[in-house]
Structure formats: C-alpha cells, structure tokens
Length: 285
Image: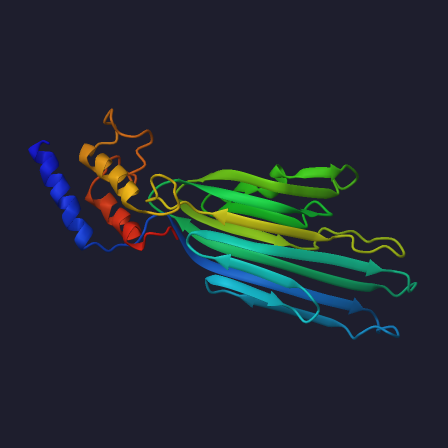
C-alpha cells in the first residue's frame, strides 16, 4: 500500500463515522394523484336512473394513496424518491337505448410526478401491464421539461391487437419491462387511464373506452453498486476499491466508473459523502 493510499483509506474510515448529505439521484418535486367520475343524464334523468353527478378527488403529498369514489372508481398509487407506481382504471359508457336521451358514465384516474435527476444520468426501469380499448386511453409518458421532448411513451411499447380506423383500437401491455436513460434535468411523469379519446357508439352500445394499467417506474439507487437492492458491505468494498484508484480513467477502474456518484471523473470524498448516506440507510429508497 502506497503512502497516498494509506491517507485516502484513513480519510474514508473517518468519513464513515460522521457523514451526512443528501443522496444523489432522483428528487421528487411534486405529485398529484386524481380520480374523477361523472354521469350525465341530459336534460333530465329518465325514470329509474339516479340524478346527475360529477365528482373528483386529488392528492399531492408523497407516499401511498388509495381512494374509491362513491360511484365505484378504485385507484391506488405511491410516489417516493425511489419509485412511482399505481393501478389506473377508466371507462366510458354511453347507452342510447332510451332513444334521443343518452346516458353517459365516465371514470378516470391519473398520476402526475415532477422530478429532478441530479449529478449524473440514470437509467430508470419501467414495468407495464394492462390494456386500453382505444389507443390513448391508457398511457405512461416521461417528458423532459428542459427540452420539452418526450423521452418515453407507452404507446411505442404496446401491441395494437385490432387494426382499424382508430390506428389500432385495442392496445395491450403484457408484462412489458423497459429501461429509459434520463440525463440530468427536470422531468414530468404522467400515468393514467382516461376517456378523452373515445368515440360516440351507436344505439345499445357501451363500454367503449375501458382501460386498466398497472405501472411502476423505478429509479436506481446510485450507491447500490452491485444492484442487490441494498447498500451494504459488498457495495462498500466496491466503492473502497474505486476510491483508492481515484481516477475514472485508471485502467483498473470498473467500466463506466459507477462509483463516481457526482460525475466529476474522480472517485473522491465528495462521492463518499453520497455513498455513506445510502450506506447508513441500508435499503435503497
């Protein structure tokens, strides 16, 4: 061991005892989870039908949330700095059997999350399972707010099972798993099931815009250097080895220099401030 390595290793041990700084990676800035239901019986409810209603609920703090509207729309979602997930449902029903007087029912649920990727680019994992009867009535998109460009759109990763006038009326996602690269910057994640792109069915037809989407976006834990889901002694050994090498262009450094947690091409005390915060927490967020 060289004298320089001895000093750096001693510094590493000292920092382990008294470190505390914010974990790099993804910071969730805001969240809005919504459920909406309405019924339109125009101009007046026919005999045997309940009065009109129009109801919605929303929620903004982080964490888990679930809600069921009085007219039967279940919804659940959860948002942390480590992942955003939820189960989203919608339907649109129009029944013209009453002649000139239609009966419309609609339900929808959605989640919007604004987040920031700090220090360096990451790769987020996206899991999708579900369907929509019309092309855009279930969706997961990620918009780069700095460039106003979409970096992910679930429509590009589903299977249109029925070809027709609506560019594939039925879209399905069967246990789809994808990875999307996110550079540093600000993003908006939108997940939901709605009825905005339905059409007007003929007499006696209904349920023309059903959708159900289970979705999860998982953000990586940068300090989990062996991808085990925890930050533990095994990760510490990986980091310590890189820390002693210092320079990312060292021939012995791991490909991509994963221990360079702040993207400055060196593995030094600044990176360890990030690492030790996650190490003390043990479990990735």
